[in-house]
Image 1 (cartoon, rainbow, N blue to C red):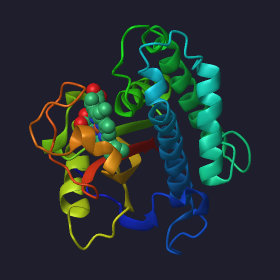
Image 2 (cartoon, protein in one colour):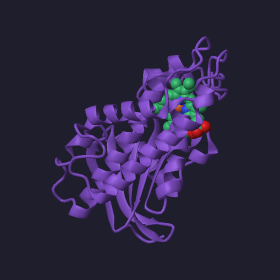
Image 3 (cartoon, protein in one colour):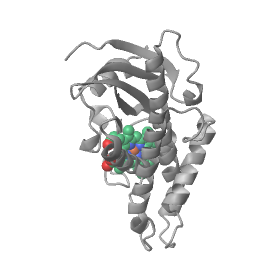
Length: 253
Ligand code: HEC
């Protein structure tokens, strides 16, 4: 493996997507652009997950058939959440052509997932549908990769011992950062890690955004460790505040 040309902790909290102007002064213009793009991609993914989370009770209502949660409504609400978080509409404002292309591909990917889930979401007589935020996110990221995978990739991964779905196993780079940076008690919580390195023989900007368990995660990822949760997986024994995973972004140069 070649040595990374840049190795840097950006020191911005994941929530500060709207504030990318407040960057460390040393960051090169091109990297700043990649950082802004990566932050936007992470935020739009989070916005989509947010909608799936907000509507879990509706989705899992066995008494109701049509939930009227189609892809138009879903995308509109996800865009509203994104706009509220960042202060910008994802497809307007000061965006590069690449931003427009990638965020547009994310919205299409999100819509495709929700379209494909309609029968499941609207099934009467079934309570838990298994359409949880993490599944939504993985499917959305897969569809995003099918559209623009030679230009950008978004995944959600986790420390290896926590991974439920093998497709979400961390690669070597992700494992290294999770173990050496995010697990280091001296690393500030929420700090985003970025690096210019190589992937598949191509130069890339990589970005890893840590995610921590909150109380709402613990019905599945909490204690007692090993107990089977509603989705059929053994619980991880996690506690609120523990590192639960990371959003991983790749932008090919
Ligand atoms: C209803 C149960 C449930 C809840 C609540 C839940 N998850 Fe998960 N989580 C899952 C399932 C199921 C998967 C596997 C998804 C798949 O097959 O891709 C998963 C996967 C993940 C992954 C991807 C890596 C992997 O293990 O495959 C991360 C990271 C994650 N969850 C974090 C969280 C966080 C953080 C929260 C709270 C904000 C949360 N989860 C809430 C069930 C849950």
